[in-house]
Length: 434
Image (cartoon, rainbow, N blue to C red; front, side):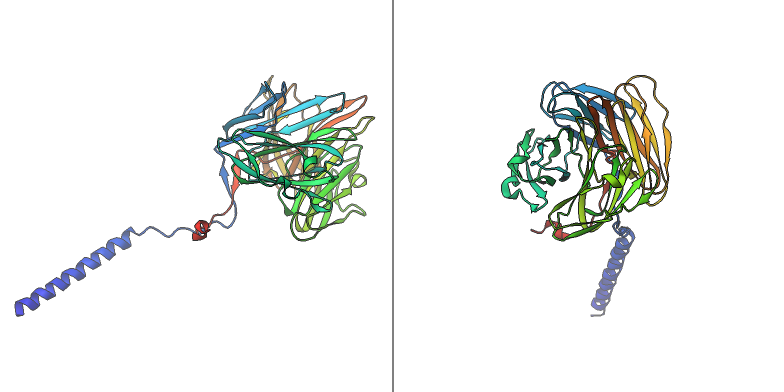
């Protein structure tokens, strides 16, 4: 019996020692606790880019990669699709001096995205053609919604648009919203990836492409408004369920100020409202700063001068924190840079297709001011804008004076495809729940 008890105690001791050893190993090998997830978006490098432009047979597309710019001529009217590493930009300019399509028009090749917003004249006043391109090898499904002064008006006609792999669809917006004289338009991708562009030819004359607008937000900056004569018309949409009271400030070359009689604008839920700001910003390169009680999207219609007027469009856009590049420029190009909230500075590099490489130069912009910078280069060239300090917004404008009237086009400076902002991620089982 004594031997059995001793044997049982020894067995117990052996078990205790083994358990202690296991717990010790587990404690030593336990990984360190994960850091808390970031609470703000992170800046991450882009690895590859797909850029899509609507086709225009015979037009030359400028293609920029860091340090180089080349041109490719479109052999047919099919969409131009180019893929490459980070920093890729592409776009083209068209110049027509006679006929119904007279005007200078510029388009930036856009990357496929989950949602795209456009703001501009509606089908009642213009021939507006929406281009949807699926550049991938998988099908895509998209919803198109048109907002007008009276609210959303396209109904079910624009929902559930199937776009096959490699397919391009051109939609006359008169088939979706024939009564809209001004509009905001959203293209939402249900699945797949779709690149979006839209071209507007006004009945009163002029043609240009509508630049993508920043998504709905309570603070929107509309940069790249050139000085000179001709009407300037601000368009603001409140696509949510609440009315928006929008406060407006102009940022010109001389001052930041509230325009007399145009200090605020009331936009009904789901509606679009136009405001003539010609007298507020006439004669000076400028930007508009909007702060709203509800999320809004905004754009601006720029009309030139002369017997036959041309038109250009700009829209709300992010700041130049990620830098920007415009691949296709021409004689008469200039940058319009605006500093908001404090002084700012950027570095500008002109990359010419021919000739000696130009040295980059820094441009300082005083707080609450807009500064115009002429770009000097021969032939086709790209321009690269890199942030240095402050909160700076910008646009690129091209102007050409003819006897019959001014030709012009505008393009807000979109974020460069070198970097992107990754939203904060949360580890949660809800992502797999129905």
